[in-house]
Amino acid sequence: MTIELLVNIIKYIFYTYNLYGINLKFINKRRIMEDDVRFILSIDGGGFRGIIPAVILSEIEKRVTEQISKEYGEDVDIKCADLFDIISGTSTGSILTLGLSVPNENNRPKFSAEYLVKFYENNGHNVFSNYSTLLLKHFFENESEDFMAGIIPITNEQMDETSFLESISSFGRENNHDKQIDVKIEDLTKDKTGDITKSTIEDLTKNKTGDTTKSTIEDLTANETGDITKNTIESVTVHKTGDATTNDIEVVKKHWLNKVLTSIRGFIEIHNPITPKYDGKEFEQLLLQNFVDAKLKNTVNNVKIIVPSYDISNREGVIFTNFENKYDDYLMRDVIQASAAAPSYFPAKPMGTRYFIDGGVFLNNPTVVAYLKAKKQFPNSKFVVISLGTGYYSQPLQKYANSGVLQWAIPLMGLLFDVDLDNNDAEMNMMAELDNTKYYRLQKVVDKKPAIDTVTDKEVITLVTMANDIMNDPKNNFGEIIDILVDKCRKKIFPSKVKDIIST
Image (cartoon, rainbow, N blue to C red; front, side, top):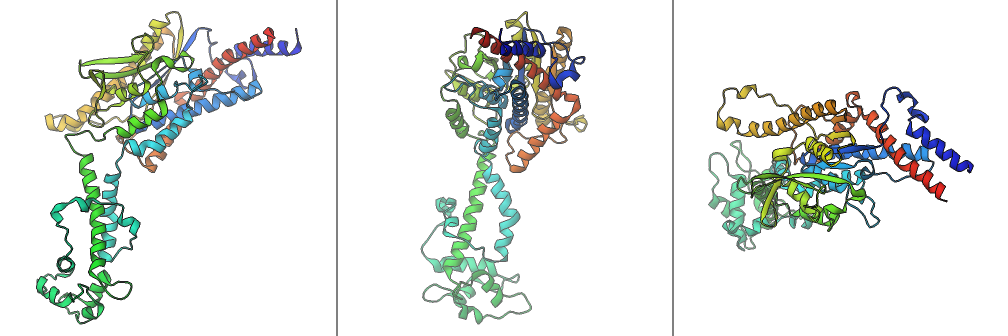
């Protein structure tokens, strides 16, 4: 027996019984992990808030990899598909579930959890395209004031940004600039008494070329009644050459109106009560680019996956899984769309003759279903369950005590989702106690109702901060989770290493 073989066998013994290195302090605190232990990961739905569990999983991959690399003496490649035997996720959780288990050409995980964090950050604006709403808000808070104070410097590129005004036939676009300037100057300069009329402006400002010149305007004088002054006209219409032209005013107002009307149209389209808020085309394209034609049966390490959706054609909940052969040939990208098609946000996902919507309508927290399916599949195994939330808001409802249908409509929908989260957590806690199962629920209670489609830099910072708060909260035992996952890797990596040495 060589010295190298002896050293590795000793290492394996120490790793197996948790007696190595910095983990000595946990010897009396943690139970020895049995050989047949299955690890379950469950991820709630929550739209763009999926960044929260993605950040947590990224940190898990990072810490476990660092620890094993340090003990093993060389770099190792550890991903969530190496750590968890069963992964379940609803809606946004389905993106992470299948994103962590889709294989690359070497049958290793195609994406790290860190990549999936960037996936949300880089593509959230495309999936939840609320640009028009933000643009509208920006205009009425900022640029409208700038415009009224004077001409806003604009470029040809800015003029090309929008073209909505071009398509509005009711504006009656004409080549008669004289007629257009009459109306525009009247709108900008008419005083409260109405003394200055359209015809008056017409007589004062039009010349043969259709331009309004500085010399013409100088003939106007200010008075105490608030009539049009030279400075007033110049502040709006004076050209760089000293002349104020009809084209200057037309261009500025046209640019401003184009952008405002475009944002208004987008705002109306996004908030149209009779169509989904988003068409889902960008989301579908993103899934195609990242998952291509991978199927449920193709998961890395044969990881078992569980993805809830709801079949509105047959009015029944559906659990997409590779536990059985029934859904093996379903495309991962189709299953994600079926689980994430939140009603009113995205259209239902057609698959064959059936239509599917977000699994969150009946199972936003899939932990219990994942646990029961795992117990049925592996009846002799022990389990470690790690369940990740996406932020929880407990809305006080006392004010609705004597309300009717209209007042209850919106809070009732939120209440149904909250009850699902609460019930699944309570049920999982009870089963874990009965079965002696290790159960960790990582969730953050927030002080305001979180939206599923708010995509801003500020929101990203808020969600990342929430994830860090979850990991740093002693009640969540995040350090203990890392230690247990490191133990699993030790038992998985070092026995194979010893076998490799013996075989050589």
